[in-house]
Length: 592
Image (cartoon, rainbow, N blue to C red; front, side, top):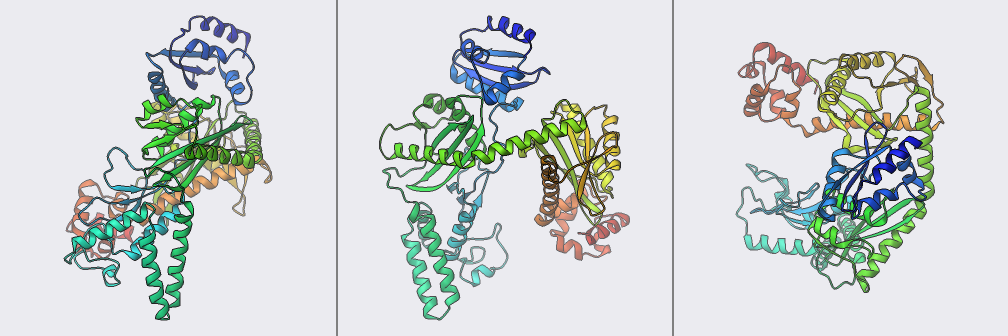
């Protein structure tokens, strides 16, 4: 921080009121790098520029050249404003959960003939089905659903079929589509399933033991062993997680531990007296413990979970403001079994941090080293955000594109993007042109945040194409390519001047760039595979040559499935399409 900046901030601090509000710290480019809130704006903002700061806070203060503030009428209002601004500006130094993973729930649908399935990304305000979870262990959730389906003949199909399916014939469905269903039998079945998912395993265990005995008596030892494994799974996931608590409702417990400028948080999910599982996170922060945990919990529930009936936090956390924001009971018992759970969560958080501290610290040092090396090699002033691109196709057709984003060499999955590519594209360079143009036209027109570096898979030719697109949009963004040798192994960087720069395979830079390259390749291929495997005829027809919205709807109405469309003759296709378009569609379908 220069003397001129210090003088400017000192003068501006004199005008800051001692009122609640939100403040925004800015860097030399005028970019908001941190958003905070305070009961007393003057005291809070002043604290950054007086006294000694270390770690990530010191980095923040060093980047600040200016600040703004907005006065609010209450601390709750300042929190709401702060969260809104964080979402809008995505500041560099605020806590942002990069992982977009959400834990699954088991859903028992609210229908005449209910289904049991695994669901994610639940809208807690709109959802009316019965939900059980979350299940941090996805495998355990799948095993539980499979086990229940094995024992109880629930409905399996999404839409009713014209004839009963295989599940009916093997006794795992009551034939809801065709048969008369005993609603009393179904009600009893649903009651037992609900009881089991709430933690009462007695009836299910009795059924499994009875079935296992029958299998053993009939010398069907393979089936008996399978049932024995099911019983073992129940013992692991339910019986051994039982906690002796006088609470028969759902609540979550948060505990934290802070050291070495790192913050470790552990969450326990308690469901009907069962410890369903735990979630943990470790990160650095510039905030105090109260602010950190409040921000974390708010984002945690917005991203991942339905709110439980109650949230349990340590006593030093502002329960009132958190409760007001989330509209749920927030508590912190000073004694008893729940207090022991808070302490246990804290102990777990401490153990996790101590176990992973060395690894995390080493990884951060390696990332910083790689970042500085890449800045030096490419002569860049700043390198915070990298956007990398790759394409996937099927035999030279049916192209899709993928973009991944890495902030300081860490994946920011919330910013990943997928691209469906026009059907007349027949080569990688044309596909790359379309994806880059669409991406950076949006950056230009919608003021989307531009990266500090664009990374493409390839050498001089790919760099030239990328520069051509950026020049057409009058954008100045550094470009870099990853070039492969004759063995198809990445071994060089290519800068925007088309100069090749060798990289040592044991360097941190090579390892991090290779990680980005593998991630974008995986992302594009997964997207391509997902579209094909979903098999939705609508998705595949979106890519077909000469097929617009009207023709697509007509084909869907007439043929209904990919199989029937592939089996259709030219004459049948011509009842919907012109001769030339029908021929092109037949060629396209052969390649899928």
